[in-house]
Image 1: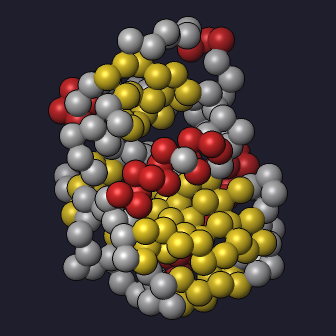
Image 2 (image 1 turned 120 degrees about the vertical axis):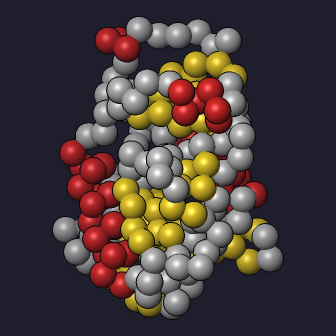
Image 3 (image 1 turned 135 degrees about the horizontal axis):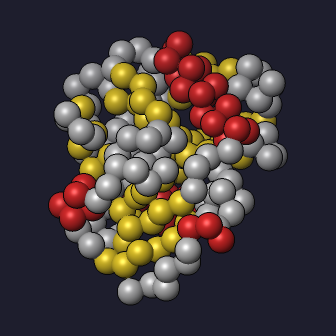
Length: 192
């Protein structure tokens, strides 16, 4: 079991690894934690989000909501059950009508069509590595990694089961989203 650090000594966006468990046991944990995910059998807990992070989450969710062809947009905190050892909590989630993700009573089940992670200093490597491989393995059609500090979004598109980088887009750029039926995503208002 990983060493536990008292919560009062953690910076607001720090994570603590709490040991190996299953999705069933994970769902039984208290709902009071500000941030919890299950990744490769490890419960990962962290502090609350900071305003800049949440601002970008909201703006991206609003942008997707405005251009989505159908389906629903969700924002964290909301668990996405992928398998018995993986229940991430992405920042923004788009679930397409007729897609493989099901909106259940307490969580989403199966891979959504589009996931967005907004980076923070303590999560950047984790979001670009562990979650990247997890989302690719489970067939998430499109994955955006948003960097609020450097004001860009890296867009990855699943092609033949492997993520291919579509591009890196900065504030003011516009790109098209294959998952969102090729609709344009304008970043001008996202990074204001």
